[in-house]
Length: 130
Image (cartoon, rainbow, N blue to C red; front, side, top):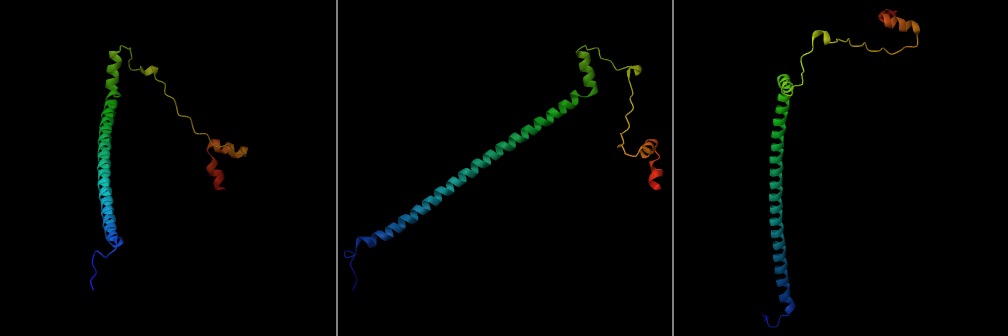
């Protein structure tokens, strides 16, 4: 015998409606999460693009400043600037230049005075061969 819907309890009708509403809620949450994620990705891409543009600008500025520094430190530019400021700078005369010899490196001191004397005279090779 077929049952009537009138005879069914309300709890049986509530179950499928609850399942359908939970599925719809899950789909809604997934859609909202997807849209939020896409928005975050687009904002991060925009930040990256801005930072890359700033980096390119800073590199260009750095190159310009490096070229400007090379021009300003060149001898003709320095001479022109010295003449412009009337500093009275001229190249040094040959008798004003002092040439210094570079000092010899100091050898480590040894405890044996004979060996030290040989080392200072350059006869160390003779001692080591014996």
